[in-house]
Length: 251
Ligand SMILES: Nc1ncnc2c1ncn2[C@@H]1O[C@H](COP(=O)(O)OP(=O)(O)OP(=O)(O)O)[C@@H](O)[C@H]1O
Image 1 (tube, rainbow, N blue to C red):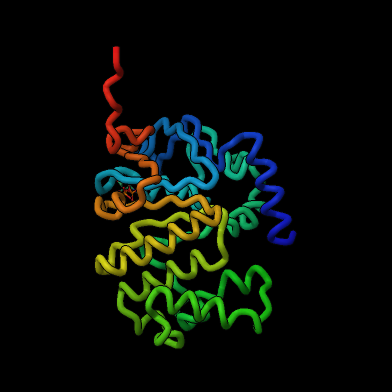
Image 2 (cartoon, rainbow, N blue to C red):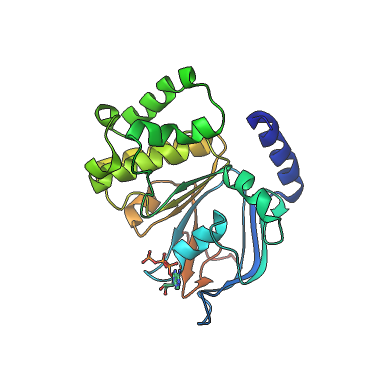
């Protein structure tokens, strides 16, 4: 299905529900241990900007894995783009997955491909002609400060440079949903701001953005963002009230 047509279908399906992500009583258990995530219930609005925060080990990466379909929940309902993805046939999952841009905590660049070819991957998968790749990929690499490293393989890049290639790859095809796990963990504050600007611009074009981070400074940079705080496997602050304390109600 053509990209615009698919997007239109998704938006038509979404407008009825008004959500792009819906979790209802979701639990996740690895193996036979206690639940890592328990009774998660929340919704994300299309076009929203969300920060996912919480202490180390609280379950942020686990929640993101559910979002980008790397993990199925042990119980509960997850609807993504208006469809129940828990009961969805496995063969439909890759098509859904292509609508999501992911910045993995460990980058997951393809080791034998250059920075250019890593960033070009989502466009090639989407069927973009070779002749139409050069400009967008070069521009994206320049934006993340890597115009001069286009031919470099991941192993020859620093951690921060690899992270920037991973971000460029995640955003280049303008996904409907962007999921980023500690995307600025390896870069200096100036570059973190620049990368956040990229997420912000993508969000303004309609992409729903979910960023897991410990970086309080980063969170304070997007005034319109909502905060999901996770603690010991549960959403501790679904309304973001911890960040924006509710005003006292006049009697
Ligand atoms: N594949 C797995 N198998 C078993 N346990 C896991 C697995 N992945 C994560 N866990 C456990 O689930 C809990 C939550 O881990 P998770 O990585 O989701 O937390 P996090 O909030 O992202 O942490 P951090 O901020 O340190 O990245 C931890 O106790 C972790 O050990």
